Figure 1 (tube, one colour):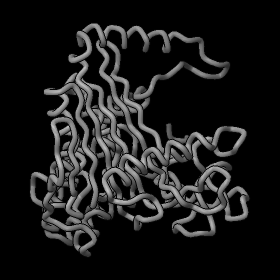
Figure 2 (figure 1 turned 30 degrees about the vertical axis):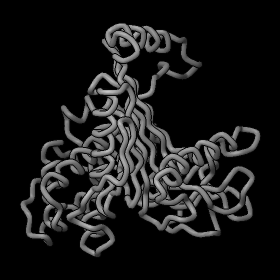
Figure 3 (figure 1 turned 180 degrees about the vertical axis):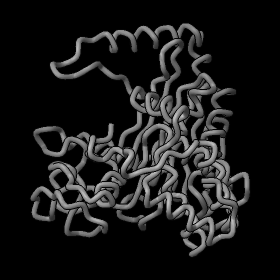
Amino acid sequence: MALDYLKLNDTNSILIPADDLHKQVSAILQGVGTPEAHAEITAKILVSSSLRGVETHGVGNAVRYSESIEQGEYTVPQSVDVITETDTTALLSCGDGLGFVAAHQGMEMSIAKARKHGVGMATIRDGHHIGMVAAYPMMAVAEDMIGMAMTNASKAVRPALGARPRVGTNPIAFGAPAGEERDFIFDMATSTIASGKIALAKRLGVQMPVGWAVTAEGEPLTEPRGDRGEDWAMNPLGGTREQGSHKGYGLGLVVDILCGVLSGGGFGTQLSAGENMTWTMAIDIAKFRDVDDFKAMMDDMIRELHDTPPLPGEDRVLVAGDPEADFQEDRLANGVPVENSQYDEMRARAIQLGVEIFI
C-alpha cells in the first residue's frame, strides 16, 4: 500500500471518470500513430492501474509513452512475432514497440495453451514497459485460471551485500480466482519499493523513508533522485542482511532469468533504461480439480486470514488484492484521481497532437 504522504488527494489531483480517461489515453496514443487496437489495450491497462490505486503505473504515463513513440524509442506500428513455439511454450519478440501489446498477447497465448494442455507460458524479448504487472495474471483469473507474470528492467537495485546497482526492480505478479471472496491478486517489486514511488515522492516534493535507497557508501538516502547512476542504488527487498536482503536479491535474479536470459533479451546490466523483457504463465485449474471446489477452498483460506485478530492499532488483516479492490470500487463510483501536473500534461499533449479532449 502507498504511504499516506504519497496518496493523491483533493489538493494535488483532480477526479476524472474512468471511461473518459480511457478515451483520452487511447486518443493520445493513436495521435502518434499507434493502431487503435494497440492503443485500446494500453489504455485499458493504464486505466486499470489508476483504478486500483497504482498511480505510479497509471494514466499519467501516457504522455511519456507517446513521446517515446514520437522520438523513435518505440517502433510503432509494431509487429509481435512468434520466434519459437511448442504446445505449451512460446518465445515472442515485442518488435521494440509498446510492451503492453506483447505482454497482453503473451498472456493470451499462455491462456490458450493452458486451456488445451493444462499450462502455457511465453517469454518476450525486444520489449518495453508493460505497466502494472498484475494486469496480466488478472487476465488468467478472469478465465478461471491461475496466472503469473514478471518483467525485468535495467539496473537500479544493489545486490545483497553490494554497493552498486546491478539488478532491476523486477516485479512479480500472481493471481488466483476465489468464489464469494475477492480474487487473490499479488503484485510486488523485488526491491523494497517500486522505482515509481521514488519518482512520485520527487514530484510531490517529499522525503523518502530510510530503507528505500542507499548511497554508494551505504548511507541511507532520503532525498529522492530523478536520475540513475553508480552513486546510489535502491535496496533489494529485505534491505539488510539481518532482514533477509538475499531473498529480494534472489527473487530479482529469478525474474532476470525467466524474462531476460530465457528470452535472450538480456538481464539488468545489459538493458538500457526503458527496456523490459517479460514472462507470462497460465495454469488451467480445471485440469487439476473442479474449479468451484478450488474457489471454495480459496474462500475458506481468505476468510481465515481476514478473521485473524489484528495487531494493536491495526484495523484488519488484509489479503493481497484487498487494498486495490477497495480503491477500484471507490474510483469506479467517484472518479479516478489524476495528479494536477499530469492532468495538465495530458490535456496539453492532446491539444498538441490535435486529438479530441475527453478530460
